[in-house]
Image (cartoon, rainbow, N blue to C red; front, side):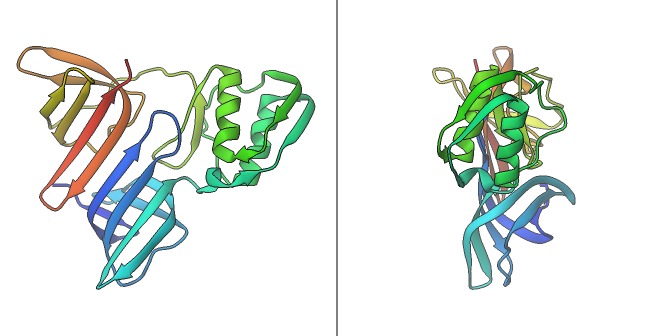
Length: 223
């Protein structure tokens, strides 16, 4: 089983929710006497996998239980209304990033759409990004590495190695797998092998569950 750590301290349990649209979050139990704060990293076998920010938690009897959110955690913050004239949507997003402390992914889609008159409504940073993505016709999410991505889905194939299907809900198109699954993220295509047939699943939301005896990942089909 993979070794999962948070800032080098052992993670004993974790549930990590990765939505296709929005900000991921993780509820984790960490073997430590020192409460982590601020920006932290969850690693798998020594390789950083998720970068997020602590928003709650405390230490009890040598175990820290807390919650992380993806990236800098700034998309939860309230932003004031703002009006733009003769701008681009890249300009609007740049202000959101500056106010929330988030970082744009290097492969984000084209944001140069003209916005002669654009009004950013008062609301959270996440709501501001949602409105921008809607105007651009894009999907958006905070990736596992903590960067904010907006763009059109390309549906790359996931790199599969040791993966076993342990449950399938054919009505809701939900698949639970065990094995080397922690690299699964939204926006991929995963080839799920079943007794009846192999199925190419476009991955929407993902939930990873790390427990002392096993790691399982549940995938919700995007289509």
